[in-house]
Image (cartoon, rainbow, N blue to C red):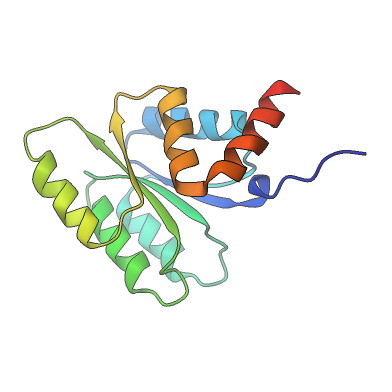
Length: 146
């Protein structure tokens, strides 16, 4: 009898205009056992997903700086949407001089975590544990051990 994992069924939206970063995130998420992954190449496409209430959405991992609509715009759209308001959100950002300003803005809109580029799988795992909780970490460790 196989064990049932509740986190594998989460639907995750990955948003990044850099295809390589998007693919790396998706590879790590797949390695961690996630199956429901939606990808968008920019914030404009992500806003369409966010506004479609038929699409299940449990977690968003979004780049900050993108053309058309940035990660903060996506975060604001989620927080303003009554059906999406509690969706977990991890903001991906690069190291730079405006980080304090960005963090303050994102905190105001209740971002759940930050992931700074460049990152490794272990750092993404830590952020997922921070956002999803210790039960996720237990399931992930069981999954990776099997």
